[in-house]
Length: 316
Ligand code: CP
Image (cartoon, rainbow, N blue to C red; front, side, top):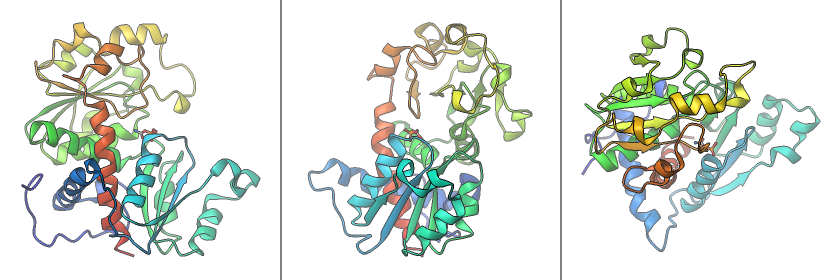
């Protein structure tokens, strides 16, 4: 059965996957349907296909990553591509080479796709204008993390059967979070109602214009929700003081059992990772197999990245 709705002969209009905002509903549906076909393969004993045999994938991560980088690497290898993950620490970037010069150098080696994570918003867009291959955004600054939002949607659909009509609370550091932005765009497009919950200091200016309900009280924000997405405090993007203390933050905005009761009985807990236990989430709730789908998000992330590589790699 189709994940959302079956669309015939969907064409992805862009050569690059730079953000959810560039995608139409039918393109999103196509990516999620494609991803669903890889879930079974990834659970089987033989996980390899040759869909991307002969293709070259370069992973270029300027910021630390566990989940995104490893799943893109596994995804490419399971599709049969030749995958090279640049070791930025030992690269010429440390000698002052710019992002564009690095990209042009790699472009000369004829990759078919470059997967890039960068601390600057818009860096993947800039890169995409300089290279001949497809570029997939693996997270840029505060702007977008499209494959994270897609894997979150797939996880919700896998558990709840749909996104449309669900009430989703996105809680924590909304201001600095590319995951929040991509999810707000995507879940809105798929027909969810979205609450964002954060202290005033961690809410972007005029966030309600993104089509969300805004709460600064966690219990009110979680009321009757189907999905609770917790976010990490992005300390690396904070200049100055946004919070009195981590302890106080946990008391008011950490997901704890007494706040969780406000959500629906069968509400699911999500977190893109990495988690800070005891800061934004109670450690027992994070590990509660009846409520938390955090591990499933990681699992389905590989399937989503396989779908994206298959679709975008073939476009070059
Ligand atoms: N969710 C996410 O982007 O995690 P990593 O930073 O480990 O890739």
